[in-house]
Image (cartoon, rainbow over all chains, first blue to last red; front, side):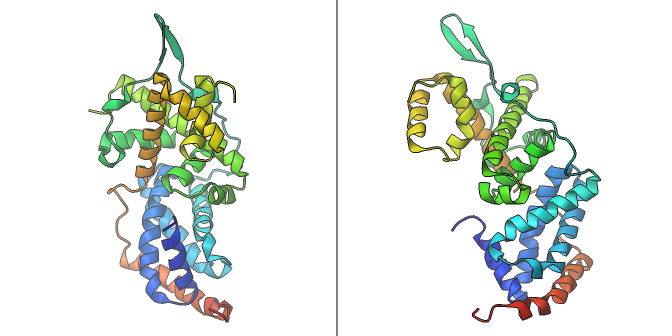
Length: 203
Length: 93
C-alpha cells in the first residue's frame, strides 16, 4: 500500500458524508499534527493547540478540498500556517542559508591514509531503539535548523510525504526540495556527530 | 563517467539514498563506495540520521487524547460542512 492511502481513503469517506470516518481521521491526524507542530514550533504546550486549531480549520473548509488525493499536502499547508500564527513570525521572513561546505565532514591525512573527521556512529542504537536522550538531541537538532530547511525535513523525513507533495505545500520546485532536504539532513547529521564526540549520546 | 571524489559523492547522497538518481550514476557511486571506507562510514551515519528523523514523528510520547469538548468542537465543524459536502458530491460516486 502506498504512503498516504489510509489518509486519502478516510478523506474520501468524510467527503461523501460518511461520519464513521470522523473519529479515525481525527485520531490519525491529531498524532501526526502534534508531532509536526512540536518539532516545528518547539513548544510541547503549543503543539496540542496547533493540532486542534488545524483540525478545526480542516473540518470548516473540507468542502474546499477538491481532490481527496491531495489531503496530506492540504492539511500540512494549513498546519504550517497555524504554526506560524502561533509563533507570530512571517513565513516570508529572510532565512539563513546552509552551504554544503558548512555541513560536510573534513578529511585529515593520517600517515598514508585519508581519514574522515567523524564520530564513531556504530555505538548509536537503531532508530527503533532510540533512547530519550538521543530523541531529545534529535529534536534539538531539527528545531535548530533554519526554517526553510526544517520545513522540508519535517515533511519529507518525519512525516514521510513525497518530494512532489512537499514541493506543493512549500510552493517551490522539486529540485529545491531535494537540495534543501540534503542540506537539512547533513546539518542534523553534523549536530548528532558533534554530540557524539562531546557528550556521548549513545550511552 | 569519470571517477568521482568522495566530496562529490557526499553532495549526492540524499538522492542516492532516496533512489532518485539515474541508474548509471547509482552504479558509479556503488562502485566507489565499495572500495572507500570513509564513504561507507559517512553513508552509514547519514542513513542513520534519516532513520532517526523518520522515527521522530512516531514516538510513544504523543499528545494527550482529545478532551470531550475538543472532539465535540471538531464534530460540530464537520457536521456544519457535511451538507455542503453531500451537495457537492459527484453524481457518479
